[in-house]
Amino acid sequence: MNNPFPGVPHIESPLFPRLREQLDLTAEEARIADELFARGYAVLDFPDPEIDARMERIKTHLGPRYGIDFADPRSDKTAGERRVQDAWKFDADVKAIAANQVLLGLLSKLYGRRAFPFQTLNFPVGTQQEAHTDAVHFSSLPQRFMCGVWLAMEDIAPEAGPVFYVPGSHRWPQLSNAMIGRRGHGSSLSSAQDPFAEGWRALMEVHGGMEEPFLAKKGQALIWTANLLHGGSRQTDPHLTRWSQVTHYYFEDCIWYTPAFSDEALGRLRMREPVAITDGVQRRNSWLGEPVAVDRPAKLSLLQRVKQVKWLGR
Ligand SMILES: O=C(O)CCC(=O)C(=O)O
Ligand SMILES: [Fe+2]
Image (cartoon, rainbow, N blue to C red; front, side, top):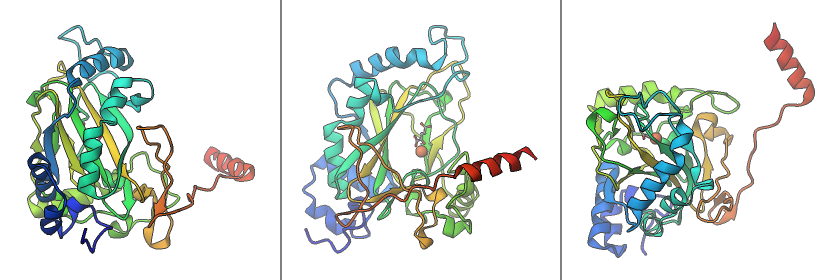
């Protein structure tokens, strides 16, 4: 294929209008590609004939982990645990959804590199998170080889804190520590999103960004691109559930890292070592086909730790 920008996902490429003709897309694939390119997200029916049975089994299997009384319609569903991370490790249905071959084939085609799932999150209620991009958690070099797929495991009511997205925000700059004038490497934070929140709010104001809720039907999925602003609306009725699964995907032959703890200009990256859910094997970071050694944060020596404890104790 004639593509001078192989380091940019096809659906994010400024050359997409030309590349699109070379990708051999079905009508449905072309619709999804066009929406990802123009708006940064796309909605589709989850491509699995067994999806209904899987979703019901997941609710039964994971339900007891949240400490919520799901049987009582008047109980507060938001009072318990809000998520189970990486349930694919013990739940075959969560794994099957994450590793869905049709979706993997589609993402690989639309991005131009092989997709692999590396994290699942299962939510029984809304997350009520502020607008953020996933790129600040899960970035890649080259940039934007990451996406999220959110699956509605029931019909989502407006009062249940639906997911929202900001159409077109994927075209706004991808925020980095360099842009916000902050040093990342060696810093510690409880949230990788926090340092960027002010920047996103300012972009929203200046560009008139609109948070659109996704009032999904059970079995519908939403693909969002790495730099699309999205979040969880306020859940105004705590008696409702909002069952969903999010799977995060990376693409092969990239460096994967967390921008909040990195200073790209200094070559200091908090690299990730993702395990592919498809085969349980860790993927090696690579650059133009060659492996890249992981730059792990230095472990503190015993003396340094003693000093730190003393210091904190003062
Ligand atoms: O489900 C939601 O409310 C948003 C989840 C999300 O932002 C994510 O998993 O990346
Ligand atoms: Fe997110």
